[in-house]
Image 1 (cartoon, helix red, strand yellow):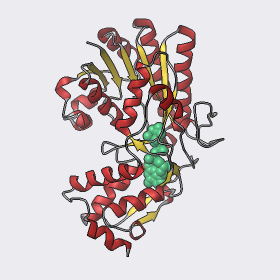
Image 2: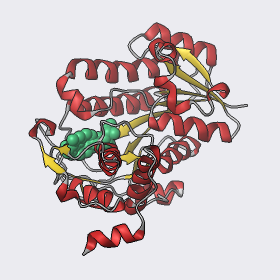
Image 3: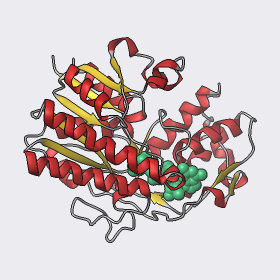
Image 4: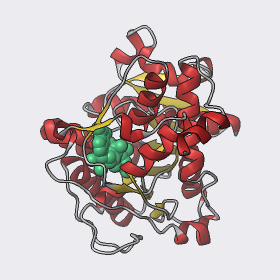
Length: 336
Ligand SMILES: C[C@H]1O[C@H](OP(=O)(O)OP(=O)(O)OC[C@H]2O[C@@H](n3cnc4c(=O)[nH]c(N)nc43)[C@H](O)[C@@H]2O)[C@@H](O)[C@@H](O)C1=O
């Protein structure tokens, strides 16, 4: 039985990845901070449906000894290093801890793998935020990095560390350069989930307004479960190679609002209010990925497009609050 170790297992991607690996008969281990194990289950809620099948280990990305001990105990065949402070806006508020956790955490995991199980396959969660102020569009594996946030800088460093462990020590270490990927398991602070959850609350009469920052920022949004499969394909590949994972379509935050409110039979213009508090000191204005290398070498393609993604997120949040999706009559009514 193959063994996988996931950092960030309690997050959106970690939970989908754990499920996918369990389906394939893996023994799945996760590094989890003690607080997450002791808070009554809130922080492991995404794992609740299959928690009894997982092996969770108390550790922290800030502690090399804890990572060393877990890797020694598990001796994984595959490590997926997804754990990070991943909210870009927060990385401006607390750059020091974002840089420390994200950079040192990656270094610690790579070094523990090198010392204990150098033949283990290692995946690093890179990000389209590494492209930042883009010099070309669409962005592919050759596009230069120009990060625009402490988070983006931490991911460039993690990417460089991963490449250097590959080149210096011959490790099977690779990075996925994943563009934004969303789902009903997305945290409420990210814009897609903030919008879908507000749509549901507005529909339920609990709220009237949604305050947002930059409505013109454009992102290449895909569906998280599709992207998790790309991570797995990368570790099954014959060689450790870095890949861009994206849909190849870009939409603005405004487009997302329009589609999400319409899904519930509402008009976003009646509810969305600009609040500069949600703007960032430096913005990434446009992201659009070219995943043709992943398609050619991994056979990877996204299954869910923008419209499908908005629909499934809004419907999930409507159902969560006890509403079914708007009827087609509702929707038609808003178009006249
Ligand atoms: C690939 C990458 O993907 C994610 O990073 P992100 O793109 O920053 O994601 P987000 O959903 O926070 O922002 C998207 C856009 O939406 C704009 N925006 C407007 N108004 C609000 C607003 O009110 N809240 C938020 N969060 N964003 C807003 C905001 O300014 C930005 O332009 C992370 O998973 C990251 O870990 C990662 O790796």
